[in-house]
Image 1 (cartoon, rainbow, N blue to C red):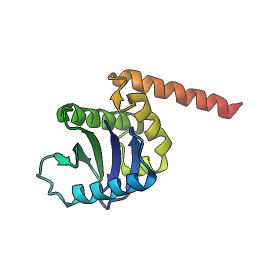
Image 2 (image 1 turned 120 degrees about the vertical axis):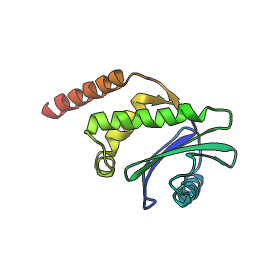
Image 3 (image 1 turned 180 degrees about the vertical axis):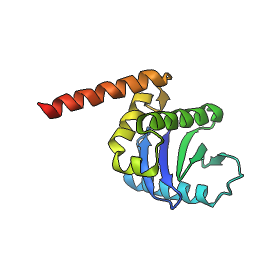
Length: 147
């Protein structure tokens, strides 16, 4: 995976994770172009599109779009499954995740993503193991704040 973007129906970027080195200018241009392209598509259209030399896989959940860019030879169905698994993890952690959860707890959303994906590859496929790691980190954070 090259990168993952989460953005609202209004086109506001809520989370971005880049697995390839790009300048800020390039990242902003890519984000802007992709958000415009995806938002312009009709709801019944396919969730896969070819864009530049990449394959874009996206899915809308409630008011958020989850968008991933993968290389041309990568399997788009696995990428769709990765998006879905990330949404399931967010749902389990936040209890029916919404856009405000991402806005106000973006560091947790990034942490969950980092526990799940490493370098753009699925690191842990077990939801139970990812959630356990997050719970342990939360406990450690609570202990640190008490001390």
